[in-house]
Length: 244
Image (cartoon, rainbow, N blue to C red; front, side):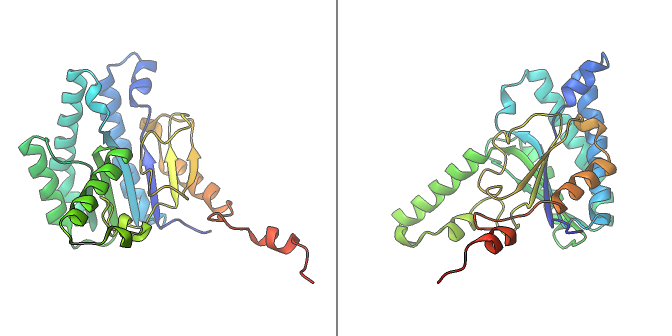
């Protein structure tokens, strides 16, 4: 079975999972953290080298202050409790998203996680935090525009490849597979540039219920897809009339 090296996940449905059980939304987010732990442990066993998760979007700040505070607390708790285990397991942590304006203690934790695990190789866990695909593209465009204005680069020399090299995901391959839970059928501003040719799999389960088997199911579906990248597949080529 062909296994994607890079899988990205939109971890959706924590609140609805909690509501269906008559529980507060925080309980759903806590259960979602446990699902993340299980997924990180399962990923290397299933042949995944890069796992990107959508932890907190740049739009999530519009949620009620109490919920945002709870999410910040869970992030701090996850890093403090799990960082040692991640490091021991050989997991490298990368953070993507806009860090400007984040509280100093949160920035410090993110930097500590990246620094401690920088040399690990079993799995790269990419956490999209305060992240938005459009925001990332705009920040990158501004960076390149400033460099061009200073005469450091020629604007005409900018290519898709050089642009991608300035994104938050510099050095990380594009995801071959993007999974979204909860039955919603959209990307929600996640990896808009990087997911241009990703295969998309939408699962009906809420994120707290996501298991190793759900991940394996998505990988099996991916293996059955024919990836064309805008070209023709082998069957299409074979069916074309011969020239002459």
